Amino acid sequence: MASTLPFEILIEIFSYLHPKDLYSLSLVCKRYRTLLWSKISTTTQDIWRTSRIRYILHPTFDPPEKMSEQQYNYLLMVVNSCQFCGECCRYKLAMHWEFRIFCCHDCLLQRCISRNSLMNDWKVSGELLACLQQVITPPRSKQKLFLVSDIIKTLSEYHDIEAENKRLIWIQEKQSYINNMIREHKKYKAQFELIRLFDLTL
Image (cartoon, rainbow, N blue to C red; front, side, top):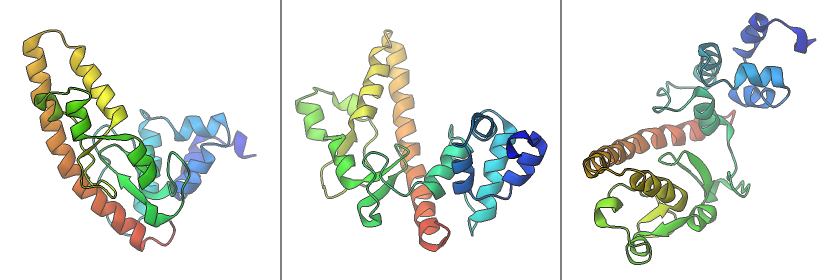
């Protein structure tokens, strides 16, 4: 019966569901996924936003720039295990907003490289190092760590730019982005920890 209900009724029903239930429903069938997983539909975004506001027990920030409500809700209220290995022990897990990932310490370390290795082995210049997003809260390490996948993406962007003046502009914009990300990380990390501490539905 649910598969034949008009979208208008489904939207009304979905607006009363917890983000975990919305996520589960998006996996049930193509019809539900179409309704619940569009990143450009204002209706879809409103469904997830309503759910977030209804079920989080205190006010929350809007999603970070370029992040959909689905991804935001998933990171805030749904994910509870390492996105790489499935580790569930909360004391081994951490949210890294700068990379939009929730993972255990071991998996993060396996995917990171130190500043020294970047300079000595990868021969990355100091100018480009300033354009790379550092792991803001590295686990069990006093070294400055960087996520390898992010390094590859960033260096690829840089080398795709041929004109020197455009490279200089890119460097300035990237460094500004890094500074903004540090401020964003502090804000969203504090919010995440508060939600996980007090919201008993998680």
